[in-house]
Image 1 (cartoon, rainbow, N blue to C red):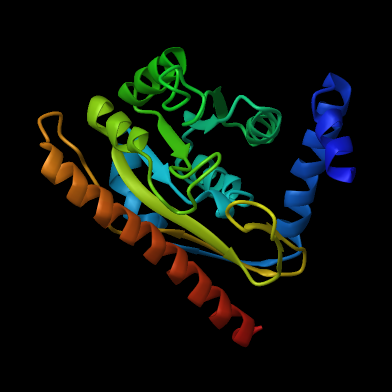
Image 2 (image 1 turned 120 degrees about the horizontal axis):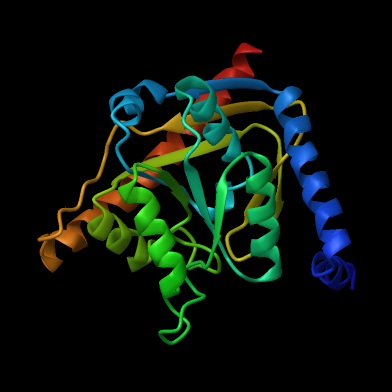
Length: 246
């Protein structure tokens, strides 16, 4: 009943603005009251400075604090052309609105919103993404979102990288105190204040030339998932070390 009440609220314009601001300020509350550590940001120095197109890939259940990776990139490199892909349903629009408050360009049309049997990104959204990447923008995407399967990569991520020439880089964060939404499809994690936070960028990149054969794509698919799992594990381990330190 409570969930239905908030879902109805999210479709009201005024309520949507209030909820967006509440989430935005809550994330800052978590960030400002927590010890933070950034790992691997030097890995992207060359790509950012050369204005190369980048796709930052992370699992959906680690979504909430990812905007602070974007915030760090914007401040460190003075890079403002950062995009994010959000679903068109109510919850997805809320996520997109929060991302826009962090200065990201939100594109609606996630991996289950397309016209091809309810799979794939719709054409207009895909066009915006490709055009942005070819201009040197960066894109943040959850390849298992918005409805799963959990921590499984759908084909759209690889197709976008192949068409645009963008480099895929796994990223993640971890938090020492959090609440798990057990009924969610991905055991979604909500970070709590007064925690330790660790933000990680992997040192393994994935580039997919246009002439890449299907057999090679399948290998990239497998290796990318392994690296996404690994960078998430690294973030979790570093948070444990921070807990011991503080």
